[in-house]
Length: 202
Image: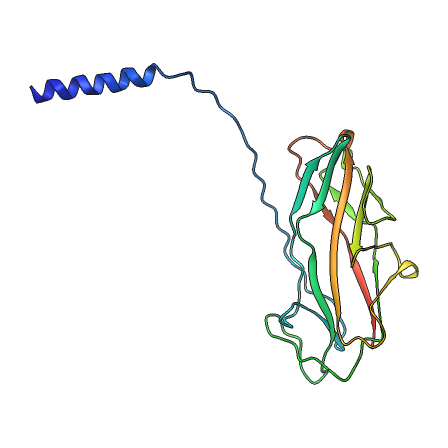
């Protein structure tokens, strides 16, 4: 009798499952991207460091992409945030180890500029965006900003940071790009690369 009851119950469950609504499917596409970090290029007199004075090496930051009336807006989710400091030349700069600051030397002048135009990847036809002269890009443009100021290409168009008495410079770099619908496809994986050069006088 127990066997019969169990068999009936199982039959009921199977019949109940087949009576449910038809299954439909949906799809999401997930993307992971990384760039092997390159060692920063500096002199022995100064260094890029994080808030703990450990040498700073930029990784890949995420983008927030939102639709606009004419296309999409790509904005860095968080800025690159680091410092430039004078270092004691008797020490060595070692990744993962705090640098020894030279507190007697000010940074007399710090200038920042782009070594070349930013490179856009993932756009239709390998489209390259124009560089914005304002901190907020409009359609077809990309803006790379340092401390809220748009960067330009070349040393003659460098942006000055801080003053001649500073013993550290706090650097915040962010980017945004505005891309019209014709230049981007749904599901595209986008990335932007920009070489930023720092000229430091100590």
